[in-house]
Length: 240
Image 1 (cartoon, one colour):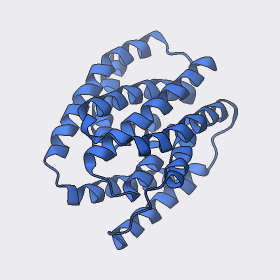
Image 2 (cartoon, one colour; image 1 turned 60 degrees about the vertical axis):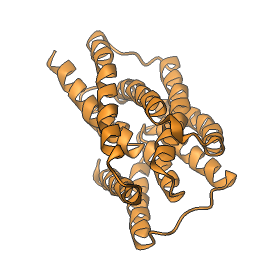
Image 3 (cartoon, one colour; image 1 turned 180 degrees about the vertical axis):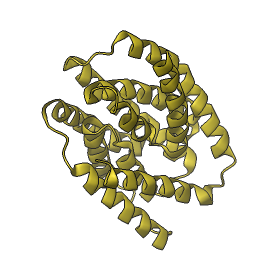
């Protein structure tokens, strides 16, 4: 029962961060869960929570619909997430997370030095962002940070950013969760109970995040996301 309560509290914090930034749920939860359960089990549990968070983002920020971004990110992201999930079941944990961490730190520093810089909002940029975010989501379970980095480069309104991130992640998460289950990963009874209780908790975290974003001015939103990208990069860089 203690484990169930702790997982619910972890879900509340991670869901709030993940909704407010468009990424971060997996980044917060996977390192903690991986200390106590096998990595494939952690990926499945967190993947389902992440999928619920995606649904909450879509429902709570539905005014931010942008089909061009969604199709560009989504199509390449779905294919890449399947590839990444397949690799995660067959390969040892690689040092790529350190490279990703260093990239995110340098990227955020560049954004702070060039606050007016933005990537061209093209199909090619969206396809590249979708591919790399899907690949890292399937393999490491933390692809949202890559997706967030690409979306932040578009300098989008916060509603568009959160909605786009949530809808793209929803399709990617469905793909990778299916691959984990297909590969034989299952949740034991106590984890299954924790999962059932954590789903409404994740909704509460999303509502708290929406209330926070309502009061956050658009001009500070990119900086807010950048701070969390920097923290994610630092964790990836130093976490063994």
